[in-house]
Length: 489
Image (cartoon, rainbow, N blue to C red; front, side, top):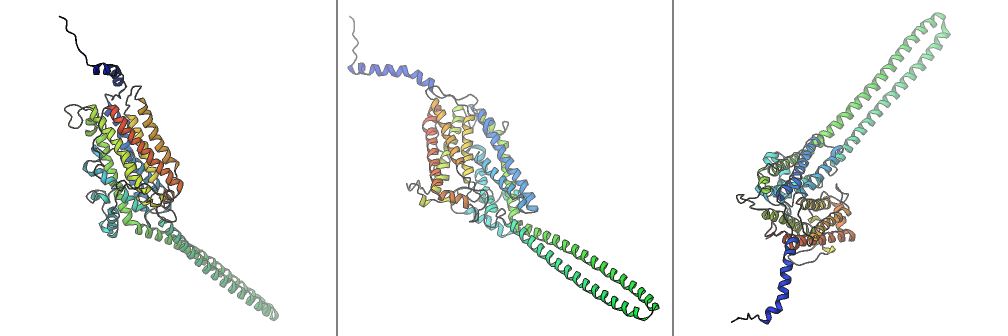
């Protein structure tokens, strides 16, 4: 007896959809992103290691420049210090988002950049050290101080605060020295002129007397003429001697005036160096400490270094990364966290928005002084450098996508490029204090309608890029982002 298999009507209704799902499954699998077998090595050699070297070299170069400038403070080297600090900030921004491994070990991140600092701990620490010049540490001793006193924000305060090392004070001292030297020279010249006039008057009187004597003698006898002639010769000789002495006196006065001018300039230079000595010593210590921390990062991320080996060679026996998925997860999480930090922590508070209070951005509530590096005018360049660094880091991975997912790669790269271009289209905000005080140019950008609009657009672009990373890139690569460094803040 033949049995008939009964299929419910529901199965007949579902069969076309099930068949379609089976047919689409291979295509979906083939379109999924693929991780390069050497992903960690690509990221280390293609971006991380060179970026760490850039930071270390920038810190070392600024350290050397500060040592030279502080020996003889003046306007001549100020621009070099501004450029050096700007380069250091931008190189830091290029690694700031790599919040894992060596950068977070031993509190290196906070030691390099203790920010945000809503309670003003950095200022209190720095002011406390400056108030006791004998307590200013060197680079080695500084490492044992509070993390708030060690990094880029403290160095920015020393350089760009009112009365700071780059706030124009050396120029004012030089101008004052030149004014004092000029006054001394003028006084010396007036004294020399007075002496010269007295000498000329004396010579004129002597000549008149000689003439009168000669006439009287002529009226008497020839013998008397001879005697008078001899007397006249003697007096002429005396007059020449007087003129020579007057000339020597003027020369001596001129040399004395020049010596006093040189001494005044030297004294002014020493006074300037002494006035800046505590801040200079502190700034040199910070730069030296940053260079030391940079060297540690370079060593760890050297392809042969300890952490770089673990990141580049995942395996079941590797205590940190067992497979490429975990390496990819670390990399994608770094991108996601970096974008979140750029928008939620760096930009929105400046725009006056409050995420926790659900308060939207409003130009009337803008707070430009909440920006990182606002005193130095490097808020915009630092954010541009961070976005450019994230783009290069992503591209270094060489992630591969099938035809159906290729749009993710193109869209993310395009969005990151737009962020960089948006920041670069804005004025940099200056690299030195304006007439209205430190950071005045940056403040004016935030306070204008166009500047505020551009920064608001940047926040939107960053939000779009983060959505692409979290909702499209991570699933396509089969990785989970999980918790990040900002969770719980």
